[in-house]
Length: 61
Image (cartoon, rainbow, N blue to C red):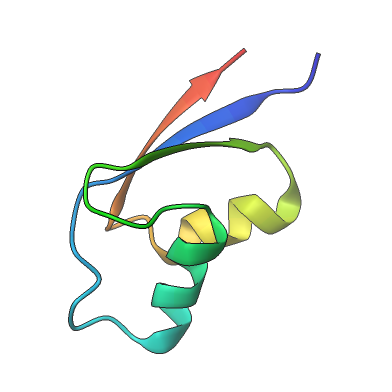
């Protein structure tokens, strides 16, 4: 069974670079306190690392 991450947007993207805003959108987060469940892949790990100051990550499974 593959690991998954539960990612929650805890800070606003106002004032962030466009690259960071795109990473948040690609993770499936739209509004503050929105939550998305993403698979544990190298691409998703890289996006999480780019915006680690904006999101809260929990490991599931």
